[in-house]
Image 1: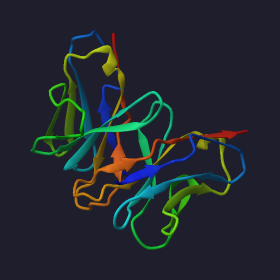
Image 2: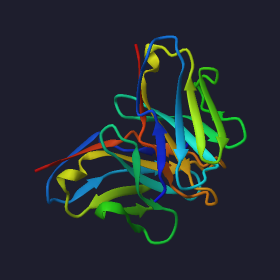
Image 3: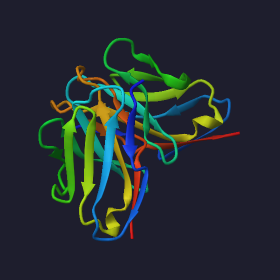
Image 4: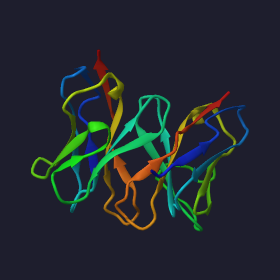
Length: 117
Length: 114
């Protein structure tokens, strides 16, 4: 099946620093990738839709300048949390959709646990 | 507005018993429905989807789901639960806009007791 990786799996950083999270589709090309944030009470929040070669589409309420998304190739999207603060601590998950079919399922990465001290 | 509801925050079932995790949806037009499972501290895994065709959809790990258009439901079922099925289950429907987004339910925690 389609595999999506994320790196790092866990990161601890100091307040004010920036953190980059990578999302890779390992065995397929993904024209579209999605970034989610999952809160402790489990709900998933879509942050943005990342399209290869174009600007990401952010959901309402998500700060573009704080959560920088780059989708430089068909297999890699990155999320950079800039000037991280403790309230940014969360579980970040990416997913990728198979190119071609609009109704194909999304495949998810294993997630990145961010802790900001 | 499009939405997905998972009315049960938690479902408890004894091992070997049948399980049902409920999902209802509200969309304009034809719904494209998905179920995902999440194990602790992991990403989500695809279980099954309904796009068109038979109302009973079979998926991974022995799970199936029944699409009911009149009741706007897509409940997840399994005839005989395993302890290893204990996880968080999400129902989702594809956004009918041309953006391939999924609209998610809040998730249901399933606990299968030995």
